[in-house]
Length: 103
Image (cartoon, rainbow, N blue to C red; front, side, top):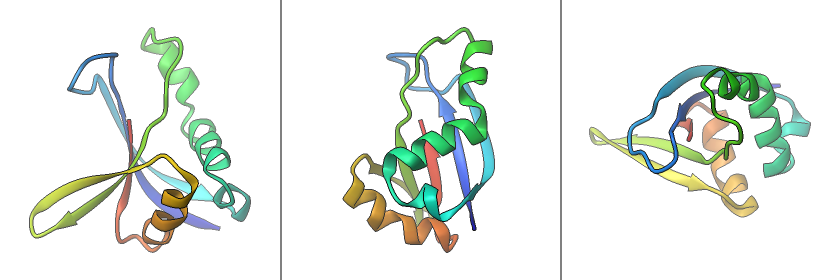
C-alpha cells in the first residue's frame, strides 16, 4: 500500500479557473498501480467524484491527470494521459517528490 497526495480541480467546460478544488491523500494498493484505467477509476471512487459532480450540477465529467513539479520557485504540470507516461510518473508520485493534480 502506498499513499499519494492529490489536488483535484473541477472546471466548467471552457473555463480557465476551477469552480471547486479538493486536496486529499489517496491510498493505493498494487492493483491500482497496474494500469492507468484502474488508477483513474480508483481515484474517482476514492474521492467520490461522481457524487461531488452531481452536487455541483455537473453530469458527466472527464478526469485529466497531471503531475505537479515544483522547481526553483516554479510550478509545472506534466500531463499523464498514456500508460507509458503513467509508468514514468508513478515512482515520483509514490515517493512524495511531487503531487498529482487532477482536472
